Image (cartoon, rainbow, N blue to C red):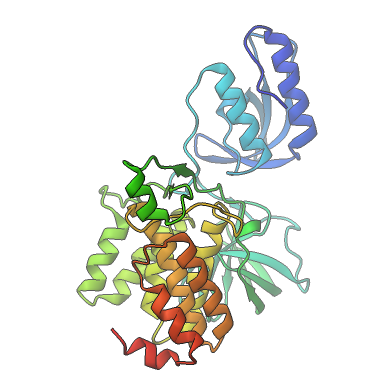
Length: 371
């Protein structure tokens, strides 16, 4: 549907209402000024001055307000509708939700049935519990279980044994029967991809090698602590000081705010590569999968290392090849290295030499001891 114009207020609002009825599945979870609500109806009352109204339910209260004040989950049809409506009104867009300001929705009622397997997205990990949300929704629950190879962003299948509420927060106990990585179903907003204008023909040729477009994969805004500090930089400082537990805690906070922080996945993957290769593999794999939502296998450009915003994705891809080799998945490791070479022909990370060594049959131990 085309974005309506101001030349016909009534017609534009009817058009947006039609989009809402056709594309937005209701009821839907959303937020208003950071508070969780359920949107049960979107309507145009026939008055251009009133605009589009949303019917909100919060607890026992039901009320109407302007659709422009409703925040739907990122990448949802509701978020697209609100973005179009705010553009038409001449209002600034909401920032992409990161979870730092809004109170989460909570699992309730019959969202989960004891004894029936359910898929959950892991949001944060502790030694004996996983903070999760129900796949396909924004509703959260805490799973009491022994944490193994789960990471923030992984999808787990759980068969619930018991469900209860404590301090108005829902809890669940049960066995994790499967863990998988599938970025496509996480409902994440895509990272932006910008085409760069190289300063000269020589620079373009050096960066791409074959005239392909030079691009920059735009990273999300830095994750901040309460004092405004950059959590990623703090985690790096802790790692350099060998305060690994503190570094891991900070990196998990970063991912709890936004799973699209590829640098956090790369750092956690590197941290676990030598002692817990399966966990490292999951981190690198998810980082690559999230970046690949924008930069797919059919991408025909390059992401040169010289553009710093490309480095988190390239680090994840390089780390993925190393983790795959440690799991004796040699061909998969070679595929990752070939992709890395296509994306960064200047080969800052030495993928070419590493690929030749893998194809020559060298083990990961031989490669890791080689400078």
